[in-house]
Image (cartoon, rainbow, N blue to C red):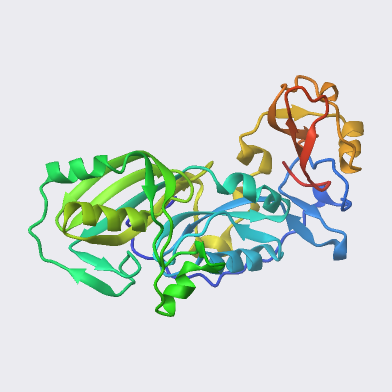
Length: 343
């Protein structure tokens, strides 16, 4: 479980030998049908076991998201591994990792709502809008009272315009903003519309403010801290940040990176469970047709709606993602998954 506010965990150099799963043996690339159980399949090249699914890591501070991906690659002994949404090195908490065929779902799941618990430090502004940057402004108060703080927070609820930090991956002139900022160039970014569905004041012990936030993908808590400090007239930066939810993945599912070495495959989350999409069972013949590139008619999927994205499954395995469009009899194929890919 993700420990927001807990001491920083040491970076793990853990490795875990892969175990072969006989239930997935004999799968063929390019065909769809699904293994009934387990989250692994046998790949053609050398019979190596491949894990398909999601692993939620509780990222410690001081480690990059790429570092976590590298650790999971070593644990799983496979290359097809990626994260679903970067966490800054300073941040801790929920970092979903996609393995094998689950990487095909990354685009679908990356843009889900996020939840954070953050601690802000009033009185200091920095170049990066967090405590890792150089101080650009400092004051010792006086600090606003709790009522003034609540009034200022109200302006950050709902749909708002937010300018990303200059030290961010947002592209400007075809280049990441942080690269230009590191060279000492002036970085001017356009505001973007983001949605803050929930913003609660958890604690206020001047100069520290603790908040909890549910927000749309693309929201920067560093910018929120900086802008709140400006609104209060004392400046502020992000002191600590813990992500407690990313789309369908929560802190309750998170495994500390330091415990990866001893982790078994039972913590891998099946793809079918992660998508949250309507699910429709198809027979073996229909599964093979999808694998061969045939576009299905809506009437071939019993109970299919007239519009919307859905997932097709067979024998417990994820076959494909398809979309029904009103007035069009055929289903548009979005993604097809390999045989043996556990749902």
